[in-house]
Amino acid sequence: MGGSGSRLSKELLAEYQDLTFLTKQEILLQFAFLCPHSPPCWHQSTDPPWRWHCDLLPQVCGPHPANPFKERICRVFSTSPTRDSLSFEDFLDLLSVFSDTATPDIKSHYAFRIFDFDDDGTLNREDLSRLVNCLTGEGEDTRLSVSEMKQLVDNILEESDIDRDGTINLSEFQHVISRSPDFASSFKIVL
Image (cartoon, rainbow, N blue to C red; front, side, top):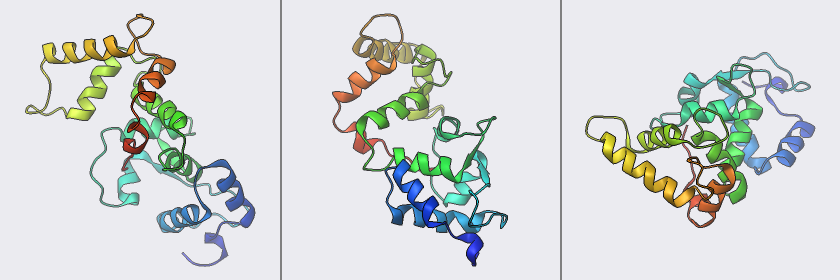
């Protein structure tokens, strides 16, 4: 798309830069990449109104391997009432959190929200089991047996559940992550 309708205003670009950990160049690159995949229905003086449904993000973002957390990432970063699509701003927020310049506290906060599958503010046994299944795969050859899963979840809780209430809260999660200096650098995503 060419023309003035496909450019960001200087004010909007400056606002995006102020509100994220992204550079001006990174924002412009994402805009230039995503703009051709958007309807030509907005003008430079308004916020980009389009949204990408979560199912379409891999097509928009290119041929990347499937991410087992794609749905959760979309739900966490989406501002739509149904939490099933991302706006340009949502997408910038997502990229900002996963950027190298985001702080470990921000990365761990969003990782916790992504791993909290039932959105109840804690990681319980079910959340941890789903997390393990996402990481190992749910195929016959990779799925853990019931006893293996129970033992692994027990071990995770033993190491992480400081107050011994049977769940991991954000503070406990961040405490565990703080003891893992590689977490921030390994917390990368591909949509």
